[in-house]
Image 1 (tube, helix red, strand yellow):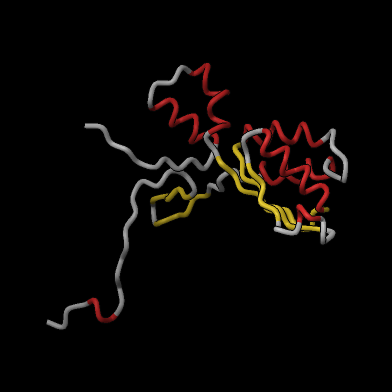
Image 2: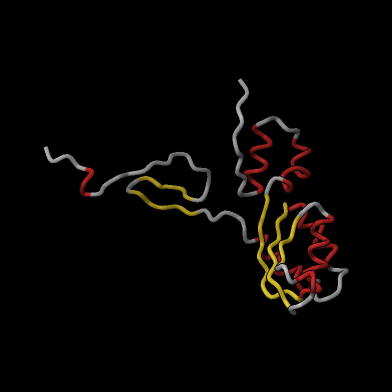
Length: 154
């Protein structure tokens, strides 16, 4: 029977693993994995001229950029921007921003740093003689109810 479920990809390692699990040719990993991770980035106080160019560049690459409603009318000097794209789309847009006016080249490095920071944080917690690895794939999850009313009086 065919099953359908949502696949959540939090890192490029997880993207490659998902591709491997379904039998994708390893030669395709480099092309497909960057398209599997959708990332949202918020940039504050962007010149509205730059925001409008940025939105057009994002749309041209199949991505999206949300700007304030006044940005298209240039009635205020700045707007916050929310970028919505895959890693592949970001790489294409960032190259193009280097050629654009209104301070857009100055956004390239901060956006790259933000993208580099999304790697999952992995750490280990000592539990007696065992070690619990946190930040990787969830193996077991549960809820423990230890409120006073959850215990039997008898």
